Image 1 (cartoon, rainbow, N blue to C red):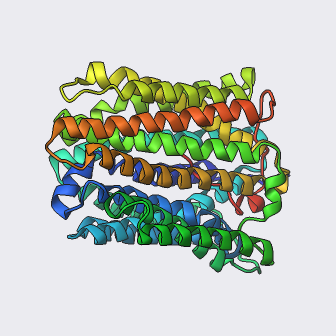
Image 2 (image 1 turned 30 degrees about the vertical axis):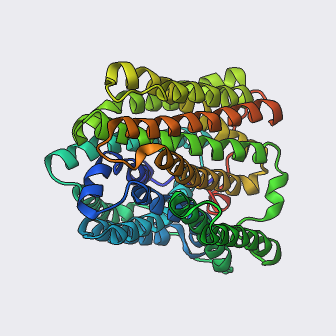
Length: 480
């Protein structure tokens, strides 16, 4: 048995703080979007790039971040990720134009893609000596994700309402500097020989970005226009190239044999559709609260706290117990169907609606569905993997969630815009657009739930295997 690091619990604080900040970065911008739109000149359709630029870079480069962590040392990559995240935050805070803002968000995503896998690797190294301690550390680390999501919604409102929206990015600078100063608590990890599949990482990230770009522009230029067709064809070609590269290179980011793991394919499909339904709901609900109901940034953030609070309670205290009793398949399928019900309820929003009637009950139902499905889908993806591939399986399913989020938001923004969501100031048109997005998000979640119940293999009380530090470096990723 290896010797326990005497500073491991202090080190866990540093790692959990990193998880908290990476996840907060996806939620803190939500309530600030209308102010950013006014100041930077985003169109209603372009506004999603503030979110998607981060998600594309983060999701597209997670596997590369894990590989670099494995080869160059987890602490070194963790530190590098924070330097990159700080740099991106400075650019995003200082931006005077829309596309400089998007560039800053993309750089932040690159930083997050380096931080998340290296943090998990370091956690495994610190606590692998004792399974009980590892379980406790994993629970505390995992709780940082919903906590970050909740804090991001609230702090985004506070900063935007009482300071200005650049502060949602400025806050990362002192926190990042403090984290870098505290990394001496983390174990040093030596580098080892191996190759990096840079071409594969570039192909999958470029393919995803091109697909989102084509979908965003399609309502404006036409779905059958030459530009849209060529862009979508180019995206498909790049993604096909990624799989060809994975099949031919010696040390791929994603060995294709991993897809023979039971339930990995169905769990990944469920996660992709979960992200494609959940993230657009969160995005359009923020816009409805501010652009239709007239909420300020702080009030909008506060209005979403019940939903995020329910998520945190269920994910940290209840979902695991339900998993033990019912297994993954009914939890994932049922959770997606509950999410669909909440989204369908949200689609009944009115231009003269109220928070208590139109938003609160439906958002809580949707949050319940998300909290029931997310962790079981993660665990189902990992449960069939051999120990040496558990980290990779986790990395793939997290990447799939991010990819589904980006593509879902792009597609449903196109739907909302075509139904009137681009007509700022016209409350009935805006509401019609947002309602259409909620309906289609509900359809996505319902399809995901039905496919899961029909296709996924049953396996009661699925539990994820514990990967060692080396295999986790290949792919363990942060989630919500």
